[in-house]
Image (tube, rainbow, N blue to C red; front, side, top):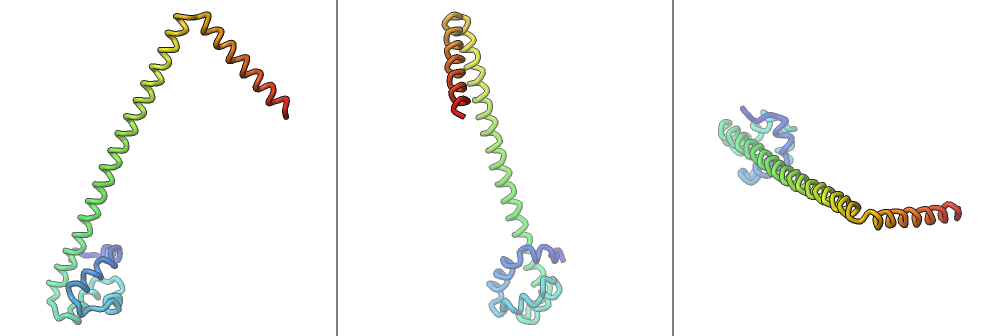
Length: 140
């Protein structure tokens, strides 16, 4: 049988609900008494419903394979979102790098076109920064 104990325990609540939908005679306590054992579960279902062992095993395999395919679909969706997020992040990083490069080149052009004004702006910015720092340190 392809159904294993780990798969059964990992999806127990969903599987138990599906089993009760198919065979209304089954109770949660009867199903829980199988303690996650595939063999005990099949035996309990057979005893309560009178179904053939092959029918029960086939249905359990269908349930667990559906769960596996749902997990695969979810994983694929996550991969798609991750790829989309990566692409968006790369695009944003490229735009930021392009803007920084453009700003650097524009600043370089301005300094070359107007060296005296650029020097005066830098001197003024340095003077203001020095005064602010001096006042801040003096206040301590």
